[in-house]
Image 1 (tube, rainbow, N blue to C red):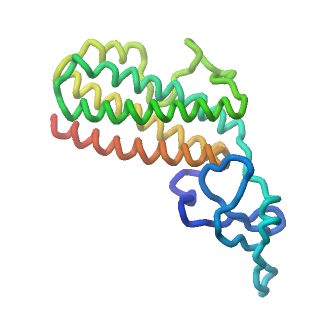
Image 2: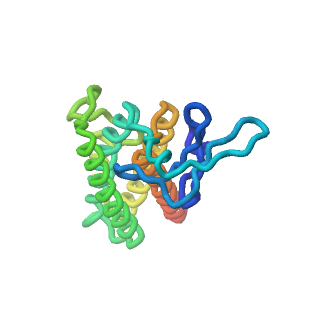
Image 3: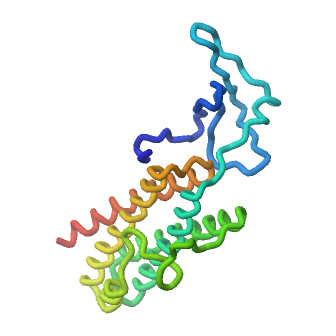
Length: 222
C-alpha cells in the first residue's frame, strides 16, 4: 500500500482488525515484551451489539507483526544508499564556500549517520546479514537515485557554483530514490513490523523536507 494511504501511527492509538474480529492497538517501535500504551483495546461486537474492552492479560497474548523479507531487503538496500549520501556530503569541504550547502550537508551527515546505526542494530537484533542474495558489484546493487561512478566522479571534479548546482541536483535525485524505496516497501507487502514502519516513515518525512529545501536553493541559483 502506498505510503500516502497508510494510517500514520503516532500518539493517537488506532485499531486494526485481526483474526476473528479482535482489534489490537498499533503504535511505533516496541521491543519485547510487547505491551500496549495505557489506552483501551476494544474487540468489536456482532452487528448491532456493543464491543468489549479486552483485559491486560488478553492484550498481552497478542503479538506484533513480524518482519518480512520485504523489510529485510529495504534495510539492506537503504544502508548503502545512505552511505553514498555520506560520501557525497564528504565532498563539500574544500569544494564550496556556500554556507547553505555546508549547513545542508551537515544536516544530512548527522541524520544519516544516526539512521545507518539504527538500521545496523535492526539487522543485528534479527540476526540478518548486511547484504542480500542479489547484491551486485561491491556487495550492493545500485539502488534508486544512487549516483553511478561516472556521476560521482563528475561531482568530485566540480568546484564552487558548479559544485553547488551539481550537488543539489544529484542529492535531490538521491533523496527521491530513497522515497521511492519506501513506497516500494509498502507496495511489496512490507512495513507492518512496528520498527520497520517507524523507520520508513521517518526516512520519508526527513528526506521530503530536505528535498523541498534543496529545490529552493537550486531555484535561487538559476
